[in-house]
Image 1 (cartoon, rainbow, N blue to C red):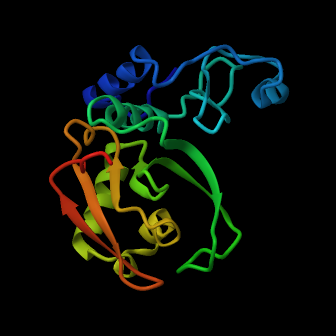
Image 2 (cartoon, rainbow, N blue to C red):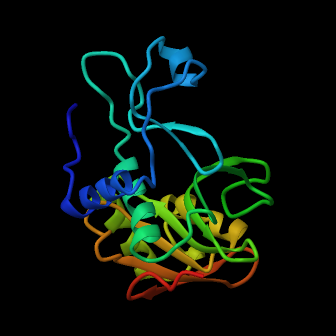
Image 3 (cartoon, rainbow, N blue to C red):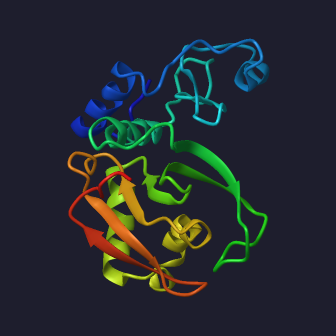
Length: 212
């Protein structure tokens, strides 16, 4: 397995914590798994999201080299750290959740599909904390720099708007942009305030907010 983006200590610690504390449970693909149907082979990296949907740490179980879904390392690590070390409830969460846009936004249109990395809900079902995970330190830092330089969604470069405009649809109270090197301690955390139907502001925080 070639590691094209080096693994960093904080994401490795969080990922192993996720496995050791069974926040994620890996198993061999069952016979009906979509990846088994596609490739004709199973692997031991199959896991289930809180919504009961199958996911895999590797994109295919055949060939001379394994293809790591690199983003899942900091993604699972951040999810586990929020639960185990910051008191967030796994029962009131989602992971790798597919949604559809409810209305037309800056670039996206109603009905278009998108995926959120992780969401933690309050007692009334609102999104208290949204996690936006990135595969590399470079991607994470670039997005955080854009947020902190511009401060509002409408002022962000188009590439950053595409990554974050779902906040207009979901209205999370807080956003955690996380990737290798920014997980321990949580580095890029923002309070999110909707400022109209097509804009939101991001206020940097010193760490994760208290769990609801």
